[in-house]
Image (cartoon, rainbow, N blue to C red; front, top):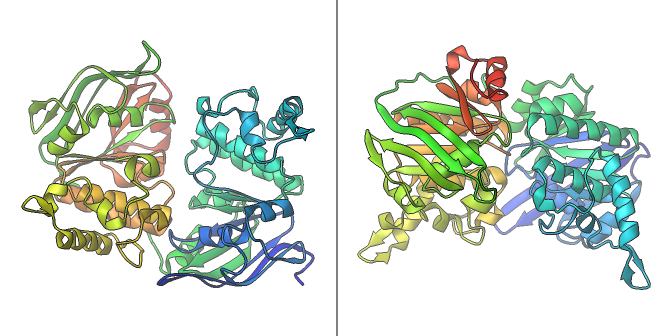
Length: 512
């Protein structure tokens, strides 16, 4: 039997896949009415452990025992774990965009009378649930018309509809801006007061420090450390050492920049929203990037950073209205993604699963996908060249996988991001656009990607980096442009910028 003070105890959990031991004798103890954070590098086994707990990997497919509220549990599927009061909210939200808030909340758990759905009761309960999570919105609103932060709250409302006792949140703030993240953390504190225990998987150490009652660190499928803490007094450096097995003295590697001539220049770029006539997504945007330079773009969610970058990459977002692009001083017409690639531009998208990867493909096929000409022998694809290229990038970027022949859908989020980076590095671009390149990635993998970005700049490439994390921009880039409502509002050398000066420019229509 597990201790009465514990809501959850997982003992000796071992889970193997062909060629890989994902979990090796993992132990986890979670107290009642607490917020327990789980940390670890991408691929460490965090999500696998939660899938074991929630029945995604059913009893019999793993070794070890699960005790919940003092009783041993042998879940055969997710429905059984939810019936017991365990609900997981995945990093990639699972709602159906074309359905309403009410329909999504009660999908699979409908309220019925005589075999018919009681829409009135479902809608009434939805109003109550939305009030609990602090979301003031019409229950009939379609999910596709809501922001990511609001969708996250609807997911939590859905969990509350199932009488949740233990709520698992996998990277809950990875796609949220600062305000939405703060609201979500405050909601978790409120859930704790209401007797709901939370497990949070996160790479954001400042959030872990602010909210956690206990921390468990997993490395290479094993429990490294687990200890209670006082919220607001978490030793972030200690967590980093436990996660990566070494000390990272500086989270941002030192780098000396040597910019050359301007490679990429954009002038008066204007793009209209394809869905809302007359709404401008980009308003007379002008900027440049030099060889060997890393230029950052800062802005709040919805400011237009991603819209600008996607429209520049072959006009694949919005409706182009006017503006010019010069590469190496020569004006070019990039009217398609293919033409952008041919002119030496690469784009690593913010949404890697939807825009960056074909989740049905293998790692080796994905890495070469953007430049198949390089692996041709005559008119045929050469599988030996394909394998050699995939292996080169697997080693160079330390992609954790047993084989490059496995599907990219088997990889952790951080390793998927490395595959996307590999795909575009394989094209040997002159201009590399990185949109949120470290989102959902642990601190150790972030450090590796920062070093990689510096190496690309040292090779003479022009690097553009979009990030929602101001400390990241200040620590990695050479110059920073700020955007507000589709307009570039300022430009600062990173050495002269700070979070306050950037935020000021991110919230006004013109630079101070």
